[in-house]
Length: 486
Picture 1 (cartoon, rainbow, N blue to C red):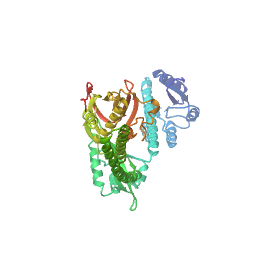
Picture 2: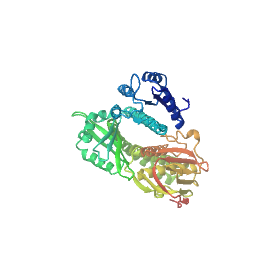
Picture 3: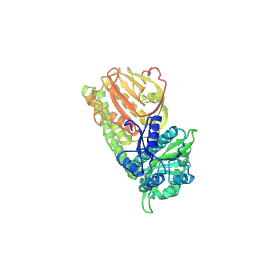
Picture 4: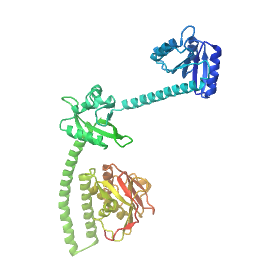
């Protein structure tokens, strides 16, 4: 037997001459096959104890144990090795018993002719089938181990939710129902859904059946005393005709997250009330001071009064930034599509560009909270104006490689050592800055689920890249300078 063969066959026959003839012919027929031989069942078992064997080919009538008895002993020990009964005796009773004993194939050895082509095909087919089954079983075990390693309930339903194809054991901890009950009645999980949420869940199921990706949060009654929140995500899988074949997804408990969100909303409301009160209390004396400075400057507009006026104006800006950060720093409203160029231009309405230029490169539609995104862009523009000088050029464009957009200026840029800290509250290198503008930008970006990165612009200025927006770009347009004063 060659050591380079891929398929090892054990041929059992009590006729030495026939044994060697069939073995040589089989190896010659297919160079993937290597044959080991044995003249009895006992000898065959000895060969298997010393060597790996992929397939057994055996005669039936042999001294001692027959080929059929050998097959039965193997199957009795749960040995599923491919077994081909290759015998000179065409006995229907033997063939019937061999089939009952789970023989892989039954071939009659004719007196005339070379059976090697037929045998080689049957051997290779049987071995490959077994190897494929083993690979599939191994993959299934691996997938099962992964499914059991998570706390999420993983599942696969038929397109109409009438059949359950797969469920892992985490289902019971999420829904408070044994997985066996779900297998018996696939839609029984609806019995655990809070009655006020059932209709909404069923509508979501219908949307998934029609091919829509669905994410839904709802309440589950684990018991008469315990209620929890669950999030489910459904992914419809279609067939070649585009019809939904089955629905896969997962369900996870999010009770802690819902409590945290509710607590966060309450804290934000308290913070907003506090910030509004503080802003009101601060603005009253600030307005008095500002008014008296204006009156004093009518008599003597000296440098000290000018410095005082600038300080009061800075305090007013600081109060505005603090109020914005407290009220809406980390929240966004409903997302909606808006044209990229329209969004950028509307973000300049509260700014003056007397000697500066705004260029827009590219176009498309972005899905966002328009008001909050305008606020972020406005703060980025204000940052460029504060640090780049009156004649700064600001370029806003669609990223070519990644999904997102950028804001770039030709000012002095941001030192690499400062890029990790510029989004921290209070960080500023401008004598007029509050240190909150970029912190607000960072919160708005994060609230959208996006990321913001700092790089060096083409002219050495600052470049802010906002990555992750749901931006559908169209063909890039030529740079368009904003009108003066926009």
